[in-house]
Image (tube, rainbow, N blue to C red; front, side, top):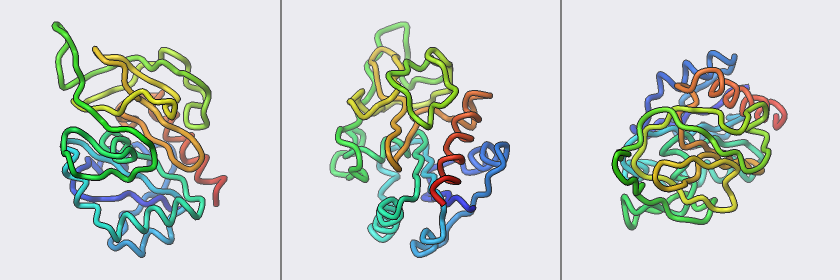
Length: 203
């Protein structure tokens, strides 16, 4: 069971690999879009500017969408979650994958709060989801971001830093977290383990 870790030059792949290794998962980095066909799951990481997602070319987008249509679970992390939405005000004209309606926007946080939002913050779990199995309301996880997706009905958990924003999406084959599970201690590892379990069940 191999999970594809998409490398488009915008993610700390080393820490993501370490997180998945800690829960016993095998990752590989596909070199071409056709390599995604062998993946049992897909992880799209990312930090920084939404414009970096333009490196995910149309061929890669088609391969990823085809895999999702074939029941392969996908997990977006940080910028990878934002990419699942229609787009972001950070890079107008750059399209997201469009799997979830909505546009990401810069956080508006009054003093003494600062943007970017960096550090530990609590999850407000709105409803149960396979990705959040064993995660209690109020669990703290590690964030680092200036833009965020809106708290739409697709979100199963939110967080608040000035604005309330989408922290977790999880439905069907499409999942995402705004925080970094690989840096979020036991709770983050539990979320990665939950994703791996979904991948195992989909195989």
